Image (cartoon, rainbow, N blue to C red; front, side):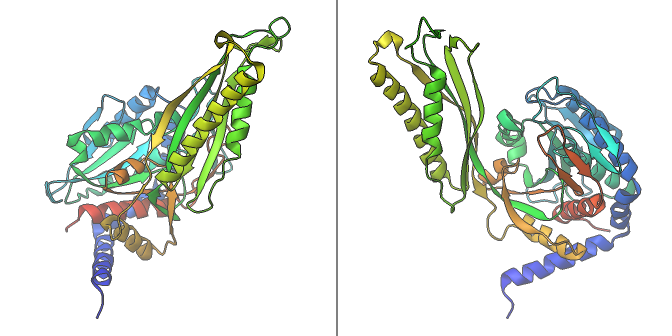
Length: 417
């Protein structure tokens, strides 16, 4: 006797096959390859608009206009800068409780204001900062909306398209946190498909957690000769980092710790008044992140105390420190037997696409941490050099990934003749 899970998987496979054979769906699936020049143009236009952390407004306005041009309804930019547009279903309320299928991609980049955005096409590849992460994901959003519009195809349930802010760095997932703290969306979105970066060979179902800190050591400062002996924040911070770097990291659960930024000092002949470092801790385990946070705090405390003891200074000359949290992403994973994973796997089987489950830190962390169904998928093609000025994107094979995303969304939302 087949198990219940196998019966459900078979039904889902049959549903994907049925939907893929519908004339309107076939038109939508063929739209992607025939409009690749349009997709490249959108991608390059978008990537040329600066979108540093907390300054995504210009790019949001560009996306708002594109959403409106493509016929999405209720297009707006919300209070934190997310861009939303709805494609109403043929059967409002078809999902239990009238719930939406959400397709989202982050519009921000890691690059600070003033970064030259030299976006160009060379030999069929697109090059420049942010051209893959995540201009390819946002382009996929537009491609999906356009293909649905051109095919005159309507899902049974509503689909909301979202260009969200604050995924990168200190943005700390603020766009998604805002959406899923609003009952209008938290209680309305049944399934979330996150589009992030290139490729079509992974299904992110496990949210990699992270904690980020800024460590600052302060002292009275002074001249390198006349005030020699005063506490040197750079030296103290260096000792703390060296100590923290010796903390043991388990192979399982996989865990990492990195110091990404060090700042401090004004000149070579000055004892600095302060020095700071930014630390990134990541793990598949919340307990490991807590352990490493304790190790970081202990390393800083001991380095400051060691300096004070070695110099036998009075309290006025002693160094002080502060450890501030600058980011926290929850660790979570998709529940076993989730409908969204069953559908993606059935779509991959239909398309002959080989994929594997993957863990990463993406916008999907937020809904997954709330126990909601979400996955993160690539927007197709190939990319490299992410987070550098030499980033590149090759759109070859993009159509397959877009077909994968569209079939997944339509199967989740439901389609009838």
